[in-house]
Length: 311
Image (cartoon, rainbow, N blue to C red; front, side, top):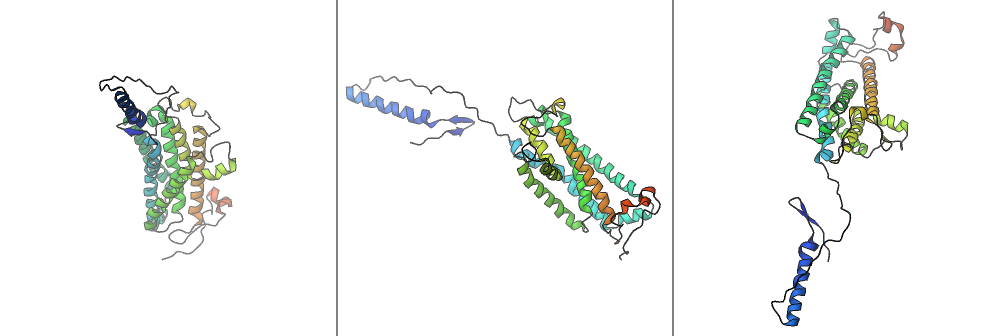
């Protein structure tokens, strides 16, 4: 006879002790009464489960299963909006209008960084505060600053990536599609990063560097560290002083932060370069090696452009 445990109302019910053993005792009692001819013959029997170590099943947290997907979608919402705004601004030639009015490129980039940085700070702060308000162990046991910094730096990474992608998109109608495509790729790579690839000593540093260029990958690695640190009721989470503690050859939160800062600078510098060498809405661009000319750094003749103005 094959039997398996069944969970009812939060309790595991063993069919062997619930049905099989009581049925066997009742059958033996009636057989004994029939053999001795006494229908009132008492039949006492005691039994208990064989002694063995307790089996502690790991509880599967809903936050551990669905949390990374939700956090990724929430953090990339601002990325999609920013990408659409950047492309719309370029499509309507607002950037060229500001340049004609005397607005420097430095002011343009700083204004975008300041505004998006403020939105990123507020959204990251509210996400962590709401997580603590709903009493999720992920937010309560891990240090507030450790969790907050992970979300903040990831969204800053997406700001840099949005700047880069906006240089290649000419229609605002395509921006939302590209944003969703980036989210879809991030969702797929998040599944791979959940296995620990490639943020452990078992993988070469070159593979880790290439993988980390895509911001959702480092974000997923950081989420895995924080989720694993609160996976059981006995887990204490990661404190600010323990953010650099390495366990099992895996990367630490400190290393994840370094990757996030490094990739943000990489994408932001690349965005400035592409913004200058890719023709704008008027078909004007700078030479490919414009940054090698002394005039670019001194401000004397470094703003020469190539191309013709399109109607």
